[in-house]
Length: 331
Image 1 (tube, rainbow, N blue to C red):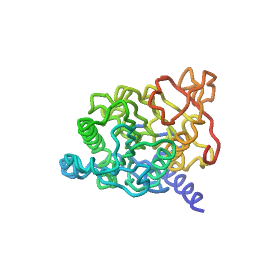
Image 2: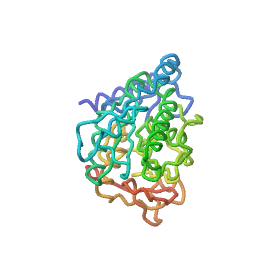
Image 3: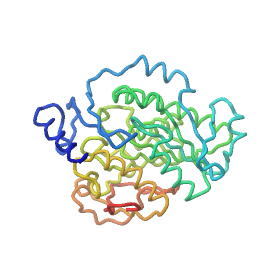
Image 4: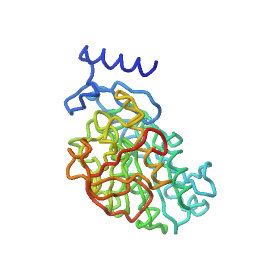
């Protein structure tokens, strides 16, 4: 019933000229759109011309302590330890191990450090390997209106970058850093990598947000890290549709994920972190290389196989790729 009501709402709204039909696709000139958040399965009506609350953004980003960093390891897989930038004792007295790979996770709009995306990915990475997982919680800003959250994304990312630089100064290695961000978090981790001088080993952007990012110089690009990959799962409205990494994966063509209704933008959007978690555990989503983005969307890719996602820090293959998945986990 919920899905039928959503479909009715979309059709009615489009007929009245209120917002853009997600099936037709988003353009930068569209004012009212349906946007999937990171905190739940609902869609939100967004006015892309709503002024961002710059005063709140400046107040929030001025204080690094507003970004919380939660450490999870195999010794504390579900109980967080809080790391505080500038307080080396918070690191040395924690379960953080400088010799292990460190995975950073960044949520998106309307998300928080304890949401499903972070829980699922934290569990997958810890089950797959003995690593440090650090969850960035920036929910105070992320849960503002979309234009405000979007407006502060880059600076929060730069704050994460400075936190990483600080940890490197304590003994962590850029060679063992993997940044993973979902939705707005996809652009956030790009800015974090850029802040380190693009020295982090790997960045994975999970369906990075699309609206208002086309011409934004702070969006994720392939030079933000030593290897940047992007997984696109909702290219019609919520996610970024264009190429932006060394490797760009378009599972099932980049939209309308199997098991999701055509109008269920939040479902397809969220598949990005579900595919990532599954690939970390099983490394089974093998994608064919494509000759072009058009080939990826039309399922005309016959090139050699390349794994999508996973936890391998030594990935280096560049290009456009497509994999067709199943409807249910592990896909």
